[in-house]
Image (cartoon, rainbow, N blue to C red):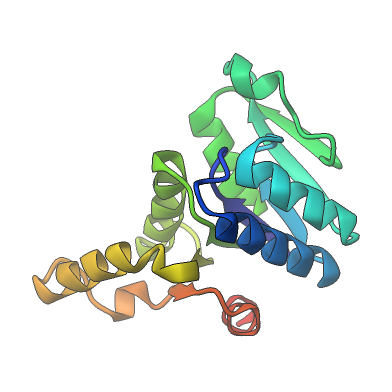
Length: 178
């Protein structure tokens, strides 16, 4: 299974995020899955790529040609590098290539990517699961916002059945395998 992981290009202020990326990366590699990610070597992106590769998994980096700071730093552990025209094409290629999506902690870019993946399934463009890796309740505010949207009639729980908040790898595996 190709699993796209969206995450920070920084490691954050707490080693718990590095540990989460290491655990997820080891799990992806040990299960024989392939990582699809932004191709960088810094932050949580670099941590997860090195762990997937070190655990025997394949690593696909998807990098836009027109963004020098990304193009000039593909990670050493990328086993296949795909160049795209720009960031929009990069996201599209990642959505096409992945069978499921997981968001580790990250910033606005991470939130943008996982939100688009969730939306594309919600509106029927694709049929893929999305997981918000909710270590230490990182994504609890987003979950509360989703509940608020449901409460106010802007979406239904059924329309979000393809989304999970969890950091339990066994639970995640069952969820994305269905």
